[in-house]
Length: 228
Image (cartoon, rainbow, N blue to C red; front, side, top):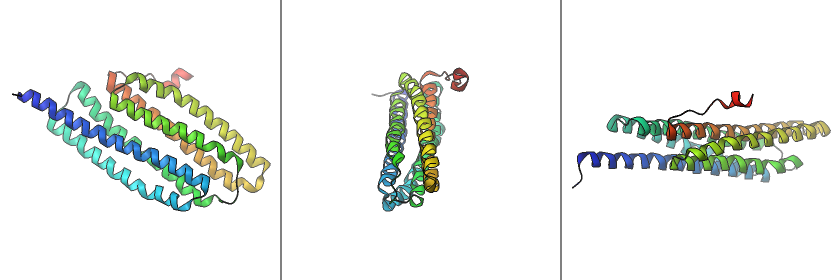
């Protein structure tokens, strides 16, 4: 026969499982939004771009559900130490993932302003950058689900590669703009797209730092100070 304490532990584990499930669902929606926004950009698909913008509402609703679940867990279970860190991390991560979805939506908003008939060659480099950023989002949420601090560290390292990719694309687009003045307005929108992808990587890194803290109780050193 289960004791009261065992019952409480089991109930808490179920609550945490629900929280992880909601975060995972948010992550899946965010990944799809990034992929669809870039696909719409490549094809000049305004209908798909509109779907990305519309589906952002589902991410917003899930963030609200995460908040409600986290508050309920704290109020009913009074978690401490490791358990409390995980609940608080989930609460913060939900906000970051929602913001990642906003960046995908921002990319979709740019598509009607980019002429689908004009094929700007540097646009072909953006899908690879998007895949890299989306992969970081996927892997960091897997790290959260597994409480994997080492995987979180690896995500932080990958952000440097994404930043280098962004710098390369930025230079390529600016050069193309200078050599093809008639494309300035079009390329300017592509620069914003690339910047949104770079910001997605930054947010994935923020999540990685939260995952590391939730798993270890130790905060990562300020990466900017380390790099300088």
